[in-house]
Image 1 (tube, rainbow, N blue to C red):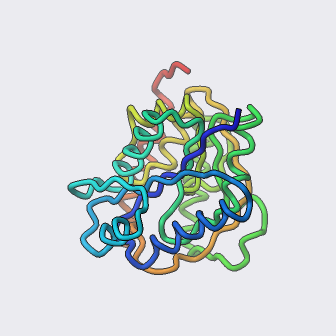
Image 2 (cartoon, rainbow, N blue to C red):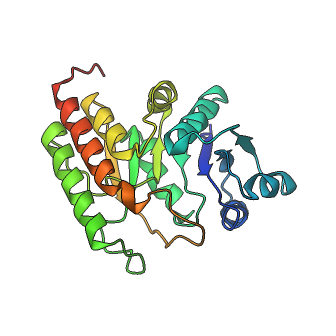
Length: 240
């Protein structure tokens, strides 16, 4: 039986990107015979995002206020679990994620090799046209070293939001999910709980429009918060 796969797309003020992102998924489905479903989580947008979703009949949930990336994504996981999807994929609404990468990050789950798969920009040189800043690359390397210290596993792209999970992890995320910048924290937690986490190379693009949710003034707060949280996880006991 074909597995049911849904793409969870958190969107906050993505009026310049969301329609193109949805249309690229629909076009890919038509060309490749895939059947990826979509749920857009409109995270209290104050621009025209909601109007675009309604006008174009794009499946969506509109939150009454902004919950942040963590709250929006958790809403998507709850939806995926309730609607009995086998695999849920986090997929950005800003044009950075390439729809062809969905097959790559779901393959290890479909084959039973992994419970949780991360699409990585850094394990192969396939992203020549995508450049992060030097400070952000340094931050990712520091987070990676902390995750390895706590779990014994090296994760290269610690902040990637392009991720696929099976129903077991879906249940975990629907019950508990960090509110801010959750990727490194949830990755560490799943590794500590004994879930099989795999990282595969994927193509990513520059943001097509709008503004990133990660403001520069938050960088120091983000690093300190994430690193301390990861260190605390080393002291906790987890049951898989």
